[in-house]
Image (cartoon, rainbow, N blue to C red; front, side, top):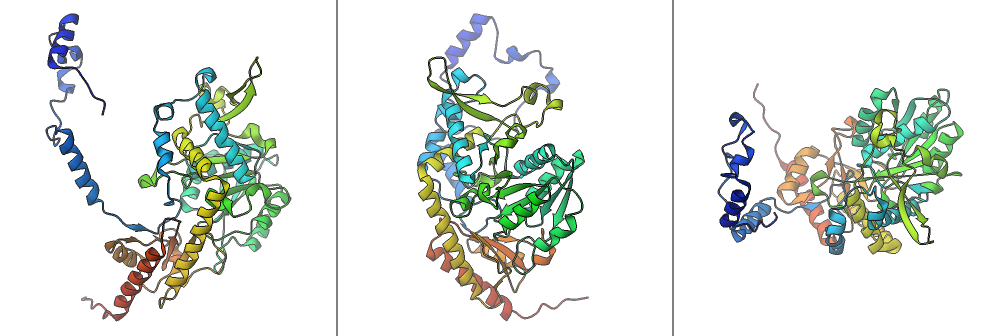
Amino acid sequence: MPFIPHTPQDVAEMLAAIGAPSIDALFDEIPAELRCAGLEGVPEGLPEMAVMRLAQTRAAQDGFWSNFIGAGAYEHHIPAAIWQIVTRGEFYSAYTPYQAEASQGTLQLLYEYQSMMAGLTAMDVSNASLYDGASALAEAILMAVRANKNGARRVLVPASVPPRYRAVARAIVGNQGIELVELPYCPERGHTLTEALAQHEATPAAALVIPQPNFFGVLEPVDALTDWAQAHGMLAIAVVNPTSLALLKPPGQWAAQGADICVGDGQPLGIPLASGGPYFGFMTTRQALVRQMPGRIVGRTVDMDGSPGFTLTLQAREQHIRRSKATSNICTNQGLLVTAATLYLSLLGPQGLREVALVSHARTRALVEKLSAIPGVRPAFSGPFFHEAVLRLPANPHEVLRALRAQGILGGYALGGDYAELADAILVCVTETKTDDDLDDYAQKLARILSRRREAPPCAYKS
C-alpha cells in the first residue's frame, strides 16, 4: 500500500484552498442511498508490525505439503533473481508497447522471448504470448481452420490431450461451426491409437492435435502422427510441455516436415503455481503461416542511422478497433509472465533447462519404482513417459489422496472424474524440487495407508 504523507493539517489547508468544507463534500453528487456508511466485518486499522504478525499467522494456517500433483501445473524451482527483476518498476508497470520510441526495453525483451521460444520448439516464428495453454490451443485450431485450403471445419483431438484444454477449446470454437472429433488412446500403452486414424481418412479435417507428452505423461508417436496428418491434407498442431523440449525432439523436427503450429503453457518456465494462475500460453509456427498467427509479434529493424531497434509488426489494426473483422480478438498478452519466462530461460540456459528435465524424469522413474513395489499398486500404462505417470491403486483414489494430504503430501491427481475407465488411478508428477527423502516419505506413507485399508474389517451397512 502506498504511503500517504498528508497530515490532518495538510488536508484542512487543501480543502480550504478549494473552498470545500470536507472530503465527503467532494462527492456530494452521489445520492445518499448509494453511499456506504461503513464496511461490515472489517476491523480497525493496525500498526504495520501488527499487520505483519497477522499476515504471518494467516499464512502459517495454509500449511505446507510435499506436492506430487502435475496435470498441467508444475512446481519447479524458481531462482530468486527472476521475480526480483520482474517486479522492478520498468517491467512491473510497463503497458502495451504501442509507442516503440518509448518501449524499446519491453520490445527487446519480447523479441528475445520470441527468439528463445522459436529456438526451443525449432519453429520459424513465435508470437509474444497468449492467455494460457488451453486458449492457445483454441487459437491454434482457429488458425488451422483459416489456413488450411481444404475448407474443412473438423479437427481431430486425441483423448490424451489435457481435459481442460479440450473443454476450453470446445467452448471457444464450438459455436463457430468447428467440430472437435475425439480420438481414443491405447489402454495398454497410453498413447493415441494410430489404428483409429484410418476411419477419418475419407472425411476432410483441418488439423490433427498432437500432445507431447500427453496428459498421462506418456510420449506419443509424434513422427507417425505428423506424417499421417500432413499426408491427408491436415495441419499438425503440437501441444507440448516446454521443459520436455530440453530432452525430446522439438515439434519443428517431427517427421519429414515438422509440425505446422506449436502451442503450450509457459507456466513451467519460472511461473509460480499461484493457486492456478495467471499463466501464459505460447505459440510458434512456420513462416508460411505467420500472417495467420494471432496476437502480438515483435520485430527487429534498424533506424535511419542504421542503429538496431524493435517494433510491433504484422499486427493488423482491426485486431484492436474492428474486432468483428479480425482474425483473432487476442489483443493483449501476459507480458509480465513472459518477462519471467525470458529471465528463467536466460538464467538457466540450454544446459540448465536440460538438467531440470533430466532430474525431473529420473526422479519420476524412481518414484514409480518405489510405489509399484507396494502391493496392489501398478503402472496403468507401459509406454515411455516424461515426468508424470499414471498408477492404479487397490483402494479408492480420493480416500487415499485425502489420507496422504492429512499427512502432509499432495499425492497426485485422481483421474476418474475425467476418464471413467481410470477411476482407480492417479496421475503423479515429480520435478527437480523433490529429494530422495521426499520420495521415500511418499512411498512409506502410501504403503501404510494401503496396508491399513487391507487390514480394516468390511463396513456393516444397515438397511
